[in-house]
Image (cartoon, rainbow, N blue to C red; front, side, top):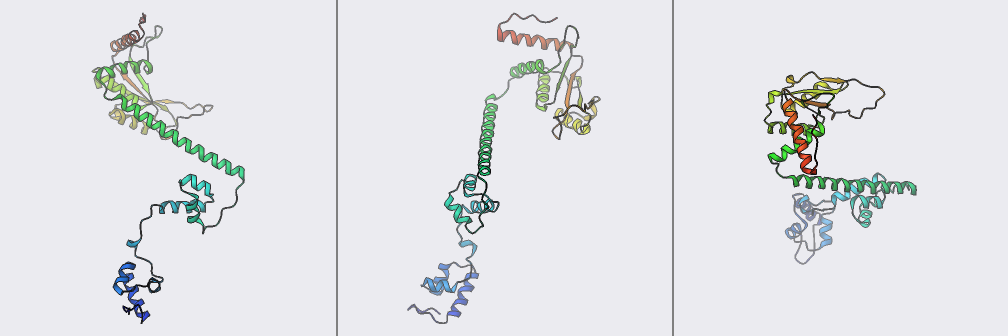
Length: 290
């Protein structure tokens, strides 16, 4: 046991007690006070080989960085590459990975290419973040949309994307074709503002023959909130083997055709509204087609 005069006898018995306390979760200070061992060298010998309890370990904010640095080093990364990737000092990296084997020396040209690629990847990430922030800021600038805002937007949208009447081919009917679901939603919101009844609106799909037609029909039915069975017959586009198609994959849903039945009068009003907008914006003396 430990005596107050600093002398220690029965070392093995004292060690058994120290180990038992350590395994019970006591800290060095608690064991020292419990056994009245004031000599650090003796305490170290008593606890030799016994790991400290988890609660006594201080959390280290760099633990994750250390593990990542070791992982990259094992992949053959240099100190410079790890520093660029993790943003920590070379001295820390050296301390963390010094027990690992050194990577094979790379050709200087290859190193330069890797460094250039890393810089370019970083630049692309910065550009993507700027692009995202710009779009979010612009979207927030719109705020609430008044009925007049939606009315004018819908007129311009239709005249840009909808079918038009020609003197040589009369098509005085509202027909809107698009592959963008948000354009379709906006167009339907505009029709609702104009009090066009839903039963006067018909839909049918135009899509490439190699696509999943049933899935596309269900996709558009969900977009317009209508039963798939109410859709008209789907128009299939035949494949041209000389053409390399880019509109493929899971995001390809074809185009939705939205038609308003008995809409000749509405079409004439839309054309008049459009020329009214242009005239008001440009003070032009426009001739409305007849």
